[in-house]
Length: 134
Length: 134
Length: 134
Length: 134
Image (cartoon, rainbow over all chains, first blue to last red; front, side, top):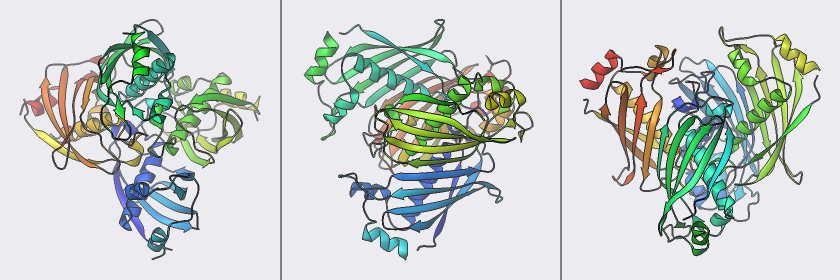
């Protein structure tokens, strides 16, 4: 299994903050999605191409643990890694940190490979599997 | 041209409010979209069916004038009407008001009829035109 | 502990659907939030008043299991109940179902009571506790 | 009046695309907001500091003309400039282009200076005015 971890930097945009003055918890799902897509790109897999080739990767599970709030204009980092995969599913884990390493949140997401036409789960296509197992 | 105006009630959800404590201006586009889709439904046109039949209605212009802020849990009304249409384009106008008629915002959106397959503008399909001209 | 469960009906709006043609997974967090706020309202607690009185309830954990996709214009129901609470935290569980009882998703969220001024966790205020234990 | 124009690069994220396969029109308001905040930062004004100092800049008008759709993973540029201001209001104009200069959209937003405490319009604070008129 690929041990590769990638790190993506984000800055909090104004509209992501709620009236408590902190980033709304739902926004984290977007940070994770963008990080996951960059993780794939880093392996040479463009998610846009996958979908064009008829392979979807919908989410089947998400869990997020919020440790410290984020505020408007904060910079932070998302560390993403592949933690497990079997034939149909792949799980990514994430760690969100401030620049000084303060833990912001941890998260996991599980995705399934799906055929875009028949809308059924499929086994991980070999050319992706190759990337994952390098 | 159909003079029909419909009114849809909304309540502000928590995540729609920004750190100024007011509904974020971008959220209004969603209120308009939902109102417009209800306007069509009220004429007997389900937008979901339109897309399934290969007709898209992407937006080409939007303008919104914000008069009074909306806050979390506020109830308000969107009055929607068709203000003009020609072969390719249709324009809706909106008026957002509180229950006591206080004006919240006015808005206009222009949409184009588009063929989903060739992704080109098309003339308003006759069965829609019939609804518009009643 | 309050055994009360409430059910809230939703309809999928156009902007909530992604290019897979299904409701984007992050949108579910908004459905849960709105359901939770209605659950509180049903007990006589207006969340807007809580915040005005200096009590915040930020999320500390969320987990969602996606079973079936939702599409544009689908109607569905969110069943919400309080599943546990201690001095500082409260946990809600959710079950999303179509009208024919098809399971769409299950979810849990954990929230903490927080003082808006000092931004520290506080024990559940007695007037809320009374509602929870009825 | 400052003639300064700044350019900010964006890449379309997955969740910003709707089921037509194009960036949802409401998302453009976020691109403009982020560009405007960068425009201010470029002049030495951090919007986060403004709000902390009790000065808000809510939007009073927005208009967007959509010329070409944006798709997932597209890169594009937003050119932002100050086009007019008087005592209370400031107007920014925007031009969204692909890398090859294809026009994606044009837009204008008008904002008002507001005192955060009394929630009333105020004249543009002198230290901001100085930046605008350089």
